[in-house]
Amino acid sequence: MAVRKHTWFLVGALLLCMAPMVSAQSFFLQKGDVVVVMGDSITEQRLYSNYLELWSQTRFPAYNLVFRNVGIGGDSSGGGNGRFKRDVLAHKPTVLTVDFGMNDGGYQPFNEKRFDPYMKGLQGIATQAAAAKIRVAWITPQPVEHKPGDDAKEAYNQTLEKFGDGVKQIAEKNAGLFVDQFHPYWAVIQKARDAGEKGRITAGDAVHPGPPGQALMAASILKALHFPKLVAKMEVQVAGKDKKMFGTLGYNCGGSDLAVKDGVVSFKRTDSALPFFPEQAMNILKWTPLLEEMNDYGLKVTGLKEGKYDVKLAGTKVGTYTDVELAKWVNLAKAALSTGPVADQVKDVVKAVNDKTNYYHDQIYSPLVLQRNIAKNPDFKDVAKEDVAKRRDALIEERMKKMPELDDAIRKALEPRAHLVEIVAAK
Image (cartoon, rainbow, N blue to C red):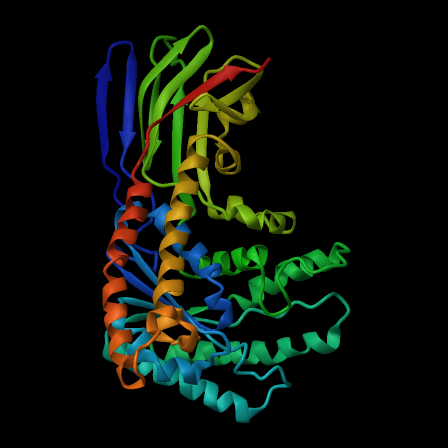
């Protein structure tokens, strides 16, 4: 990406601002994309899909991305193919992610009688997506994780691995993007076992991971989508060679009001992106440095006197570093996500995404599109059987009108917020 450099000369200070360095060209998602996430019960959990959305939205707030989850428990590739028009085309997407295989394999040793329908279903999805000019990311199933030593149950992973090979064939045949989440996911599990871990590390159950496992899923998927690690970086020069010049240099962020007074370095920082990691998934970090791998939220300060310094964001201490560490770049992602203004904004974004996703699933998709428990649904009380379809269609149309409002709430939460950064000698 070409970088534009703008320079302003201020009294007693030099302020440098550089254009964003995030590699937008290589990321699979582009500005204005509408993304449909299709799969089975693991997708319907709305965990990895929300994490995909949250990482993408926080990294590219200006993209105005729209995500819709159409996962159905117990579904297979054939089911996805059969409901393509209803569940995919209805949203007019530009991008589709497809994650089937867990149910398709039947929890049995590999056999062609199950593999052939799986491939036929995937190809049907591919053909329909091509006709609609939808870009597709083809995702392998993740492994099952039983308790260590339960080799008989984990033998199903051999089936899932072969089904993943089928996903690769479909991606190559149809010019799609192949996403291998199976092997990165299993590598983390194996690392934990090699270290003596006696329990499951992905939470949830063996088939349906909890937040730790689904964060691992989302990260593996995003890496295959060429997701950029860089969030934003700010370099601060406290003093130049003449001891009078000082300034800031920003990558995907802006700095202003730099001051050095009474040993405190302070400036305002406005980031064009935010770091993200699921708060409920922190346990997985014992076995893999996903948070840092997915978030480069940097700060570099040169010219400090020898010693330790507290970094404060909007008056809240988020970390303590030596002058040597600060001069070599520190990644503030974990610290900034733990407390302070960045953490607060990320929580606002998480809430907005959850509100949107849950409204669509709980008020539209599950009760109306899938017609679950329709006999007990008060919206259909006293509705004649022959009028159910008409009533359902009217409710879908009415409730879908709220979706743009919920999408806008996400964009509002993503708007850049300036916050004060202070580097203070630690006591």
